Amino acid sequence: MDNVVESSRLDKLRNIEKLGLDPWGQRFDGHQPIQTILALPADLPEDQRPSVKAAGRIVSRRIGGKVHWLDMRDWSGQLTTRKTAADDKHEATEFTDWSSRVQIMLGQKQIGEIGWKLAQELDLGDLVGIEGRFGKTKRGEPTIFADKLTFLSKSLEPHPDKWGGMSEMEYRLRHRYLDLTYNPELLDVTLKRIKIVRTIRAYLDGKGYCEVETPTLHSIAGGAAARPFKTHHNALDIPLFLRIALELHLKRLLVGGIEKVYEIGRVFRNEGISQKHNPEFTMMELYQAYGNYETMMELTEGMVLACLDAIGGGYQRKWGDKTIDFSPPWSRLAYADAFQKYVGIVMNDEPGVKEAALKTHIDIKGKHHDVLVHELFEHKVEHNLVGPVFVHDYPAALCPLTKRKTGVPTIAERFELYVHGMELANAYTELNDPITQEQTFSQQLAGLPEEDSMAKMDHDFIRAQRHGMPPAGGLGVGIDRLVMLLTNTQTIRDVILFPLLRPEK
Image 1 (cartoon, one colour):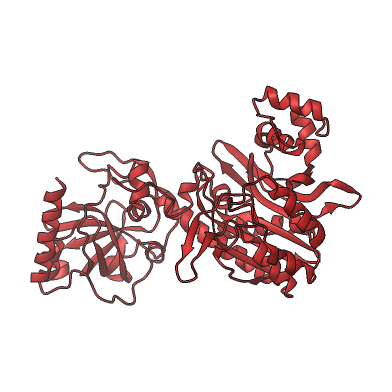
Image 2 (cartoon, one colour; image 1 turned 90 degrees about the horizontal axis):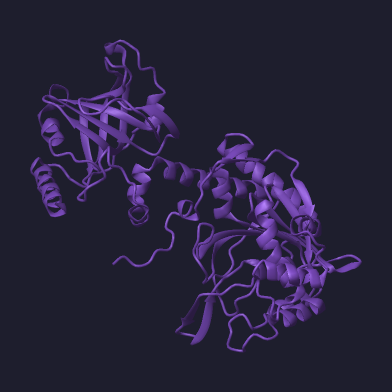
């Protein structure tokens, strides 16, 4: 069947060439966004209808005798609910669609001999330019009544039909270009993601932060406890790793005098894939000299609220069958208090923690007490954190890059922002003492085999700290998860344009 369709489309391509037209199109200036056209008055008398010019993709086609009807779409609209027009086979039904979709009427008389011959060669998925007048049909459908048809590009592959759509997730992920064309929800999320990232940049720039770019290839995989992707530089004949974090290079810039610095970039972790995890994802990390983790709480709340304002819809947001209330101020909850509330014991009760871990089927062999505490936290506490809530003051043993709380060396000045059990942000009062930093690195790396890529200390980072790093607050935000929460998207695959897939068989 596909061979028949492909052959038919190739025949149409040749027929377009025989008409003296370029099937791959040319420059088409002066066209208006369909959303702008749809905002024009559509109820004017025929002789007063405004002239318009549009370009887009054919997403529906209905052939009549001397009139063809097309639906054409571009990217200028927003998600909306509308009603289909009834026909002989289908009743009118409501559906969610991208609002910049307009009906085109191609009349034999109106578009001329060449235009009408060209109309016979059109297929679903072709790109065309339309010039004509905008009004409504007798049935009240906003329509461009074309007087000129320009061919802009031929689609040689079949597109999903109007009624079949795109339902298989595997097919959608492998044909993201079609998914964007025929799944208006994905296009809406994608454009909102762009707006969110743009807003983060504008917000931080307005606060005096400087955006930088740091290396993606690292000789030491540092800044996080994660398994890296390994590669090799042929000219230098050295092993390298794709970065697992942005942290250590940004802190070097603090030492260098850039007092407010951030980066939005890809990081890579050679770990599992799930609804919340993709091996390649986008992080925003920032550091502010002379701040602390409370400074970062204020900044995080303001930044996320700015993103909500940018995409619209208010501070009450749907999340699956739940609701998130982002109205400020956000609550703050000490780690120890959350642990006691949901696990039922205090976290420094070592026998109690071991007993609770065993009851939760957590392997306790050879694990530090604070590690067991945090595994219990993940099992018993996280899913109860509706939020948004800043969980602060973590066990120090979990935070080798974090300054200890004054007078309480077992507690680190760290917070994580949780929303409906999902970690959204992680922030520290940064450890700027190179002596303590080297000790905590040594403790963290103890026991790892020498060949392990995470068993190597970044001595140059320690050296940079020894030249004097200012006290600072630092923040990391997973952009993909932020977009998920702000757009009510349940899987990370639908906020990343090209998530990692197995090779196609």
